[in-house]
Image (cartoon, rainbow, N blue to C red; front, side, top):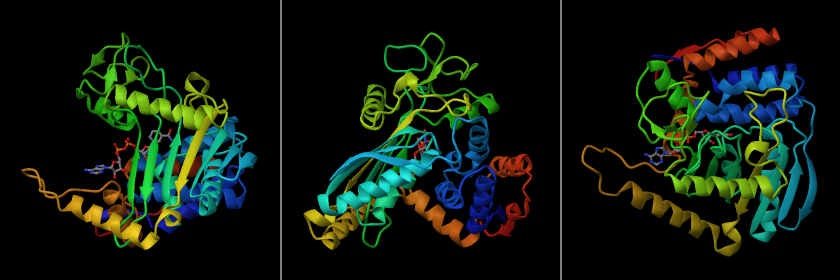
Length: 357
Ligand SMILES: NC(=O)c1ccc[n+]([C@@H]2O[C@H](COP(=O)([O-])OP(=O)(O)OC[C@H]3O[C@@H](n4cnc5c(N)ncnc54)[C@H](O)[C@@H]3O)[C@@H](O)[C@H]2O)c1
């Protein structure tokens, strides 16, 4: 038996908290949906566990609770949204919805956001396109927390990237990753356990690979995934999500956690491709199903029980979460209770229920 919180209660709590922090009800609902969907996938590093830090930034002025994102330039197949330093989810949902609408008639569309903030998990936005039988790609830059080959210190963000592909009978393919070798949360966990780490995760103050967490993140830096390849893709994201919409890049982007009073100047980009314009959509989705089943049926490595598709682990967790509630980690639950205390909110909605795992 594990302790679980029903999806709907968690969403209602987040809406209440965000409204109390000054957001309009419809904006609070949009942000809450992003965070709770992310938790239902089991991606707890970027779900409601981040709520308390968002509330800090909303109070401190780094994020403006009353800002409304605005379309500042657009063409038939592209748009630029100004997030006006509101919560990153609001400008990002607006931009992704615009890209979806424009791809309906133009087959492919790009929309970017400037003056934005942290948008949470990239996968949420990529998945928005799938709901319309379209391929979605979502990306954001982030404040520098990663070194690049040959350099020392934090030079570029571990810029998240997600793509989602609609399937027929199968779950959509959904890859959602950061471009560091490993997420910061995993390094923090090893630090807390006092354990050594693989030397592909961090560099020390001299820019040398290290198997010791040391005093990171005070000094040292995360390493890109796959070395120069992760670096190269992080730079693509700086171009697509930073330069193109007119957002900050590299050290112009500020950390919303370390500098909650500073506007983040982040950028996001969303690309939508509408396969239904190029070929019959049912044929496309059928071929996606076939591709998925071929991969799943691949010969297994010794001791391997299963081959997963990107997103498959998360879709299974979500099905379970919708049925049995979300198995929120203790740390996330504690931070939600702390957020409730900060705001003077009742914690009734956070009461967990026992459920079969
Ligand atoms: N907003 C930001 O600034 C920011 C920055 C960094 C990360 N993030 C978010 O953090 C989250 C976690 O990122 P991460 O890099 O730690 O993710 P991760 O390394 O845990 O990878 C998760 C992805 O890999 C897929 N996957 C895992 N095992 C698989 C397997 N065996 N076969 C096939 N696919 C498999 C999952 O389905 C998922 O799509 C993401 O949601 C990302 O968007 C956001």
